[in-house]
Image 1 (cartoon, rainbow, N blue to C red):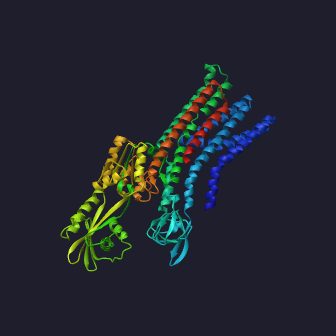
Image 2 (tube, rainbow, N blue to C red):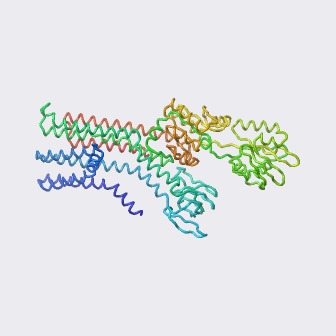
Image 3 (tube, rainbow, N blue to C red):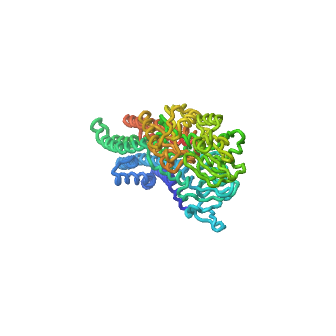
Length: 638
């Protein structure tokens, strides 16, 4: 299976180069034979050079003509070459046949170089396919059995040994190791993984053996989603390229009409002889063709997409690479985007007569039966303490939880819930709790009923702000982003606290998903090009509405990842500034390429009408400009 694929790829990548080499060799032999006076041999070798070097261009040009009823530059080049050869045979000036063959050769070399340039960007994507092994070791009745990746089912348990690639996404059920996730997320350092952690297909296992439970079909793994999205990005043309494609079709028709006029009118208007007239008309067909203009955009954008992928930034199409460089306003979701989305115990304040351990143990005893993120954070904080699970646990959503621990009732929840079970809340703790809440933290009260109900203490819970958030906001401001806002469904005090920590002045709090959508629309009315950065299902409408939707690849929900235009694979906010820089740099290179392409066309046209260039010089100038702008676009690979 792998060998035919590699052979096919080899053929596709190198056939054009081989054709150009053979064409050049036959052209040299034909010129040498003509120089020696062996006309019959030359007239065998030179047509062979025409056929081998021009076959692919002729096929593409005729296909476009008959199937799409459109003219393209490939067909124009072939017509110009055949015209030069016909003129040479008619006038017995065989150097014109050489000129036509040179045109074919340089056009073939140009096509081969363009193909090579495009393949460089594609190879960085195809290499993703090699990141996933073909087989996996599945545990069946205590035995390891090798099966194809396509045969894996959700719920299967697989074994991955040290130094092996993870075959599919899953959850670790046994073992501990470090994983190199650079190929998937862009993280430079290995990441520690243990029981309960999610692992991704294509990442490299370190020193420990792992037992992994498959939790999604292999075709839905992160690496396969990346491959599908990048393939989609390569096939979808951005608006600027679509405009150039439409322009080329109209422009080719104009060239043909102008070429016919130039081939017929000059003898009557300016007294040119017919040989000069036809020769100049053929040269005009070559130098006026928009090959360089056609190559000004897509190689640049594909190079930018490949560069982004290497850095953990996934552009779903070239249009988004264009747009991210034009963004004037950015809206950030709070939870899971500016913050880690993983709440943790910030501080424990015990009441008089209790210790921090007493408060944590009591709270963990009842919260161990809860699935709430706050409860999990408390249990994790008390992991090293000896506590026993509660019985008769009852949870009241949005209020708190109650349970029996060693025949004593323990109450954990917000102030109003706990106050239903105790006489009063200590004033000192009230003030501390109010201070925590003003800082954006959630306060959990803990009380126990023994001889009488009393408050044991409070626990402050915080969603940690991402380390790089403040630096990212500062960097975006320096890049010239005019407005940066934060959107959240959280309360205003918490939102203000996070916004202040990261340097955002404008905050919209207590928003429903449709409210976030309205904010994006309002920003678009004022700033036109607006980006939205989010991770959750409730962010999906806003991500879809934004000019550029950016999703957190690690923390993001599947809906957010599918809706967004750009995915940050390692959840690194600082990559937003990198993406914006790539977008701006790509636009700069595209503009440079267009100026160079148009400049060459004008220069060659003027030279042709003044009679200062011949067909080979016109070909070199035309195809040289095409190669030049193509290689210029490849600068974005670095």
